[in-house]
Length: 405
Image 1 (cartoon, rainbow, N blue to C red):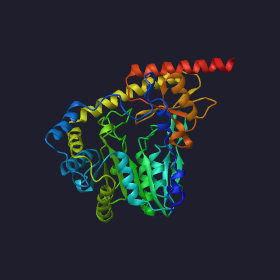
Image 2 (cartoon, rainbow, N blue to C red):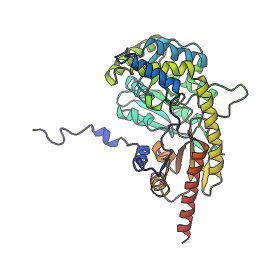
Image 3 (cartoon, rainbow, N blue to C red):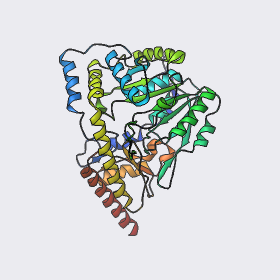
Image 4 (cartoon, helix red, strand yellow):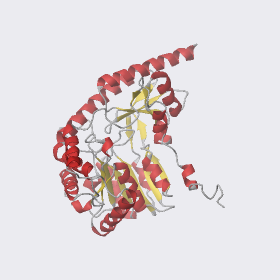
């Protein structure tokens, strides 16, 4: 006879933290009076020409399984797109996945074994730390530091953490939630250390096109390990169609593997893992991805300009509120701000939903380094952002009155 212990899930799952972003959102989803800025999602729908490509593929009956690694035209399109940004990248190095989330998990499943040491730059979107933990790896956090209005990396501290025997370094830049962007000289130093010790680099590049305050030459993307490294380096880049082409609901992403022996082995493993996870990305979604790459350059430029305007507006408004400290982000699509409060960030975020109708993500969702902060998604109109600021301002005024009473 089975006992309750026999049918219990893995004990490691009890240590896995549930998403605090979802916890806050679940407290307000369905309420018409809540302004939601909790998820990393734009308020604009996917452009019509991308939707039309997906619909055309459906009408043509493109509803069957595809290769595990993606249809060749999409792999070719991704390779061409990346080659324009970073130098030659062969389509044989591209694996198409069912979302950027899936790309990250496939990379983790390919590399990590129980007990492996994985170093992650934090605060960061929780999937990057919880994914390795699901697989039994040990996660070592190296926190960014906020000083003089900017988030910065303590490069020497991170280099010291990359000890012999470390399996992988995980870097998300531009960073969710802080908007920090890694510098090329930092990438070169990290790459040299990882080469020295045989450490893999997993780069979460989902926000690579969301870079603000670009110079006169208008750099097309954030600094990338794909540019700094050689094709044979142990670098895996994960990316998604969600942010750059406004395709969050389509669930389409990709992986870039090295070339050479490590890359050939990885690509074979990626194919197997995709088969056992999702089998393949839907064919009609992949067709929409081709359309996005071929015709979406203007969409990216417009989106970055829109987000920079929203960032500047929101930072200016928040910095004028009492008890609020703002570090202006250099990239991504969030403002991560500190708010003086007697409550922890999760409690505060829930109170904002309940009492102000304002949905923000709690800083604690991104790790201990984020406690005391709130994350506000800026992928929205200025008018909608202003309505949110007014709700926050009224909430803070009521709090001050209650404290004074």
